[in-house]
Image 1 (spheres, helix red, strand yellow):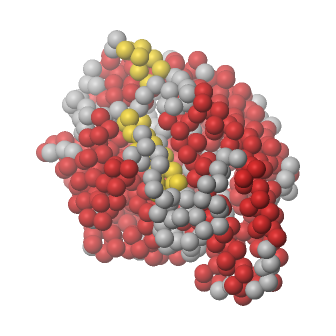
Image 2: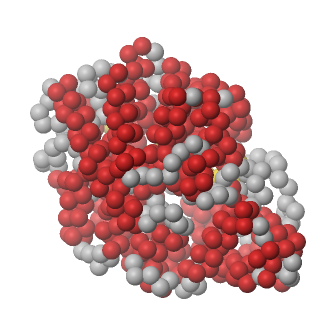
Image 3: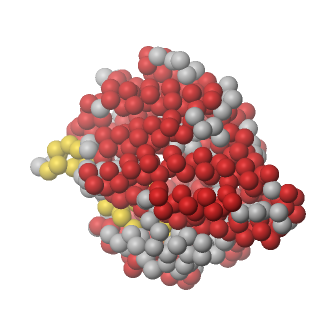
Length: 569
């Protein structure tokens, strides 16, 4: 795996050889930025570019160490390097970033900056100044260390099945086997292996709740939810809007999801439907085998991207050649998938745990959308604008999944192609209730921070009843109680989950636009990506040809369109 590339953007302010893992080399750069006069617009704009460059260099060092650690959580040297960064570098940087933001806010030249260029940056910087508290820095470091412990526990989870040691991600293949006994054995092994770490993970989460509540109180907020809302710069919707989306999902999507499961139960001829019956083909056909190994997955996704756009295809080929992908599941690798951006070199990196399933195809297409987003705005000089709110970032990725759906014939033919498309659309229906479950759980957790573990379990089970499917957990109630522990967002990126629901609504609008005019929909999608985070969220959606609205009135016709398409398959 090659994580380095020749920089296309040579340093102008940070010395070329400066080590961003060494505080003694970083501190003088903060000192210089704090000394500079910011009396004129020209001085302020030049200063902002240098602040951005320093931020890019430090960010990239942290990203490289995080990527290396997650790629092999059982490597002590990688763990040590990552911990050094989050214990020694980040805590020292945070108060210095705050002082630089204060200098920006206090600069008399700030009023001379054109609003259409700097308005989003200005709003973001003011919010960051308002919520920063120096006493929160060590608490945030402890929070990151707890997440690293969680990642390490999950990365070490394996079982022995079919004569070999396998990761829990690799075991998901058996849940698609027509032999129900095999599915049950595999599911039980994985579920019971997770339970072995339940107490440890509960301990970690208890500490996280305490830390996060202290962080919020220190910053003057009643609860962590309201703190995080401002921290995530959710200027364009409120917690009440998120709760209204939960209600809309319950009313519109949950019945559709349960109806699909009723069809599955009838087709499988099982009663009751069980958790190990949810991933298998309902007509008991063998699992889809879209690829063997990460190399073939990448090569086939390249063809899909070329079919969509020769430019996107060539960008993805560049990623393959440069080694900016780590795709296959293995022991010691952290769970999940993500796209990281190396901010100094301005290129993406994709991490995932492929095991040969259709879900892996969807994951790489999804993370590919994030990667194209990073590449689309790499010429933007301000690093803050090379990133955007997740409500748009996830439109880039979920939208790519749907745009690529017409080209799944690269992986499948005949009935398998219909199966893959059906699986993808059914997945959209099923993910909405899960998003609502996870997000509503987080609202409850942080509005009741003094809760006991028993109360937490009860709240979780009530949400599972509200949003869950028809499958029976009889005899496996304890596994259902702990199901939330597998959702890594709860640990590493708290309150980051409702974005998936909002963005899925945007992605479905993009899909509908593409059905009317694919070329125009793709053009607007790419134009919106190129804006990065330089415009407010509703304007980014508008640029992509989407309406920033996630009320029931917008959700219902989109769900109806998915159900109608499923009828044709």
